Image 1 (cartoon, helix red, strand yellow):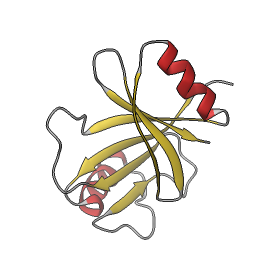
Image 2 (cartoon, rainbow, N blue to C red):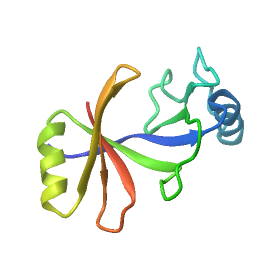
Image 3 (cartoon, rainbow, N blue to C red):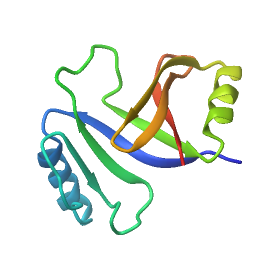
Image 4 (tube, one colour):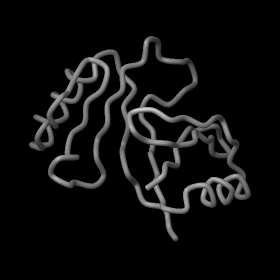
Length: 116
């Protein structure tokens, strides 16, 4: 299996507002049910990659505020593969109907690998 870009994720203060900006800028529809906590652009139309916006209470110093969300059917194998290539496993998560792991590349840039 190969990895594909599932989402480009923006950590932000107001997900709906920032998603609205990118929706207008890219002339792509803002998906239904956008809220200050979570919003997407392009999911309903089947676009790839989907832009995803997630509210964070405080942007963590040193954390990417935009990062790649990769996905694969064999996502656990891909996590192991990434670690074998030099990535560091940061943590596992299960939110917004998705399971994923956050990793850091050899220079500390964060990215996620999700079930897909």
